[in-house]
Length: 133
Image 1 (cartoon, one colour):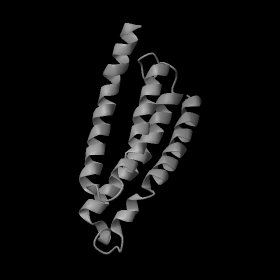
Image 2 (cartoon, helix red, strand yellow):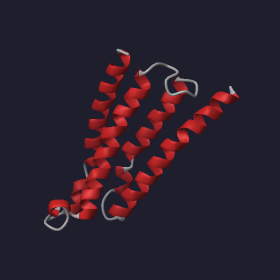
Image 3 (cartoon, one colour):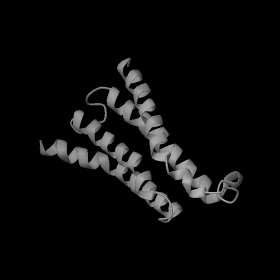
């Protein structure tokens, strides 16, 4: 049992490092003017899904089949990708995203809901693809 816990912690560390870096970037861009705490919820969900995947697989990514790893990856790509892309666009003022907007920080009000729905769709696609492997 101790070796499974060690494997889970060891294999979860890269996920945690990426998520912490993404959360730091969100807080850097939003700078407590918008909704930084709310925008970290999909990132926390990615960490929870990765932890559940490792628990189901006894410390291995594919220990319980391919459903959980592909589902978790399917959630992470749209959730993290869309969040980080829109934060980058806000920070770099892509196409006037910041300078030409009346309320530029309102972009982030419903962003966690959008990214979570996109992540759930990605999870479902990954789950279905993993079932057929």
